[in-house]
Length: 68
Image (cartoon, rainbow, N blue to C red; front, side, top):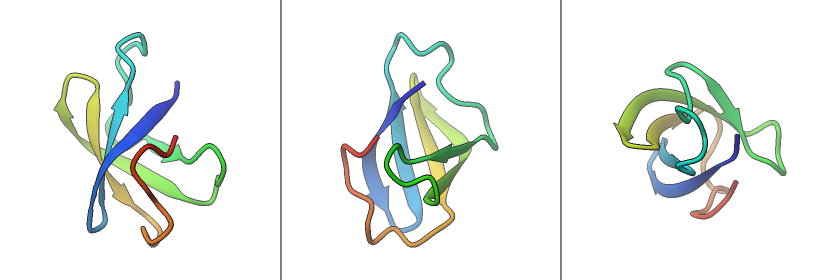
């Protein structure tokens, strides 16, 4: 399952999953970036269909919209 960063607001990162991804993510699930396994995001709330709010557990300086 691959998601995409659609917004970054401080330490809160909004991640979107394709409609084909069954359910997207689960609350408290740990997500990592495809190219950087050390950058972790913890899912803490649903933002609507296929979108989730995540808390960045590392500095967000290197994150950008569109990252997978």
